[in-house]
Length: 249
Image 1 (cartoon, rainbow, N blue to C red):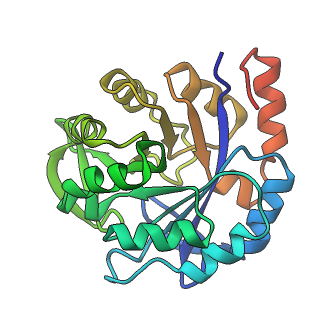
Image 2: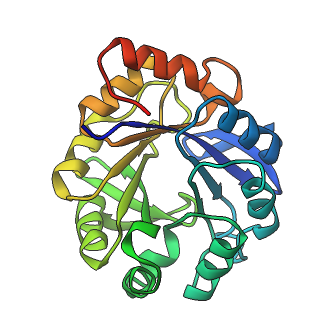
């Protein structure tokens, strides 16, 4: 049986880890290198680094911060935010990233997924999708959740996987930072739509939220607030999951 993954997320803005609610009300949460080292030592399976303002500010990802984090952790590091080209990906991989999360620029130029997966392998390319329920369907939002696209997230995810994305990172904008639990309906729909691993994001507040995400089909569950503010440790989550019979690393 494939182990489920518990993944802390570092949302980066102005070089600091931040956290918001519904992609707004951003607040300081800590130093990225210190938190990365803490989560690695606590048993995190992977770490996700998202430069959340890079796309809307039309700038490159903070590669220096990525390099500093990569020096203190020895688990897979996924990096996203402001990535526009194969050369951007190559630079981030050279700086220590293991996987690359493509969001806004992949939506604007879907062929970027194909180019990237051919160059580096599909296992390296993660399609990150920020989705919000609009009353009819889950809509894709880009530029850090600031701009709606009127595109059905499930259709986009299917297309992205067909183009070569080797993993999906699905974030519920409705649940982000609310501590109401993962959107299990969205997770199950995404998992039913593709045959690649799915990471769930948005809304975790307690251990059984992770169990619900895994029961809905997720291969990994990502969280920020509950780890940043000391509500639970990675080991707390893993201990609970083990007790519930979930295979974790």
